[in-house]
Image 1 (cartoon, helix red, strand yellow):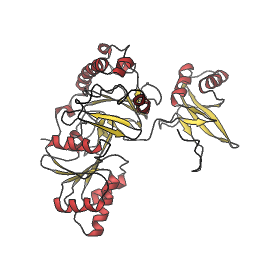
Image 2 (cartoon, helix red, strand yellow):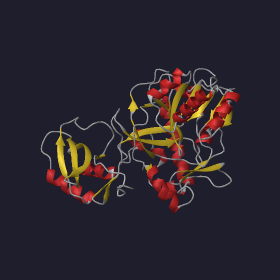
Image 3 (cartoon, one colour):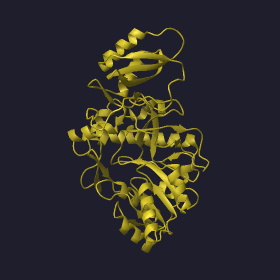
Image 4 (cartoon, one colour):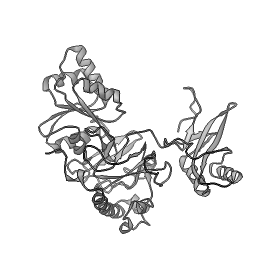
Length: 420
């Protein structure tokens, strides 16, 4: 293999867009025909009409936050899957519980590309410390590593002393797992006088990978690279030697949308990561709202890969909060904005005023002229069933951090009314 996993990574961006939208139309048609839930969700969608991102923006978003209820109503996959027992190879359960099927094709979760970018090659021994129990993390890495021609030791999680002993005796080339567990292994090994010198590379995920953690590994001779993915989708984006954002995987189409809506954000702005799988026949997730915040970086990566880049995980988009006993959701704020074209951007700020919950809608206006304060306040009452005030800001005063609902209240550990 050369510098890149395959030719797809260096495609002309316009060619990639054409080829991926061709795959997308086939995926939507397949989902409509073979998934009961998507048969309903996509009932009014003509796959042949999805020829651009603006056309895709009219397709409904299905959010991860909806899966628990969907799967409760229709076991085991909420009607979204196009597979059945005997066809699926495995089924996993993530917290919720949310169930995920695994198909029988090689590298089903598309981890080989990210492993390659992290320096793993045919003939390597990979010490895999993602969980093999209930959740799909261990299988995700294993399938990708096997597709690369690596051998895998299924370490799983915990049992630190045994992990250290195996590493000392088998001398694996690299590690896969959370960065914090790798640091625990390395520290314990140092304390015990056990060798981990064989480890020279790592693919880490499942938690934040800070620059300090990255530099700590480099100081030990280990090049760590992060992967962003989910238990439902598999790999979404991955880091390369350029260390400049996360490259979107070639097997998915990624959008960044205003939280609570299906509307794309302006280039570079923070929003919710929404992902469509392009060739997963078993679990064809279409415009799947992850609930994660990120933003696209401008331009292309210095590493030569030409796909879009994400800035990395930047928090959660599902900002629903309870005010005076009622939940307020980002989608409700977006509904208010849609009903008042004079509002360019809005954020609901919730805080305490004399011990009572207070809501203030902070708005930036689309242009000059007057603002219908009373009308907007009435719409806010109608949509949220709560009274609130309004603050008019100058253009650019609202921070670009993806927040639509900003809860500034402080709670002690005994306050259980916040559970949701």
